[in-house]
Image (cartoon, rainbow, N blue to C red; front, side, top):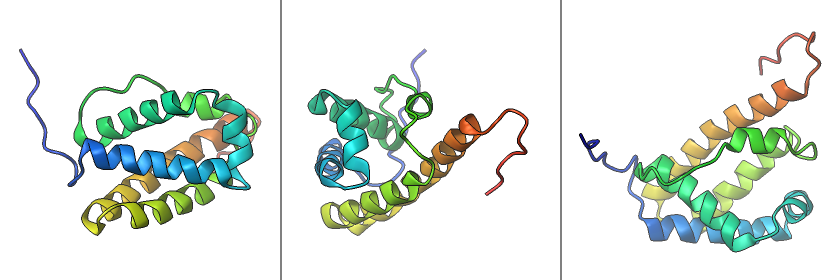
Length: 137
């Protein structure tokens, strides 16, 4: 039995997703905060961008094309600090606003921010001592 085809979460095309991912990572590579971290860990930028575009096609278009665990990847990189997520998301929003029409940029940024909250919380939780009380903000 095949799965029903779901409509996109919001208006977006694979081409828009690719353009956003490409423009965003071009900015990341030059960013003084994020650039050094990403440039240290990403050896093959086209492959990285394709993997991230697949993540977003899965999240937005429900393509079922992403295979990965972004939470684990971020936790395994000790130089990825929880405080970097706000900067990452602000840069993502800046690029989306320049790259995409508002009917795509606005909900995509909202989705990225929701995902970012979870990613930041996961990194914070993984880095705190086992006996420490949970961080609730």
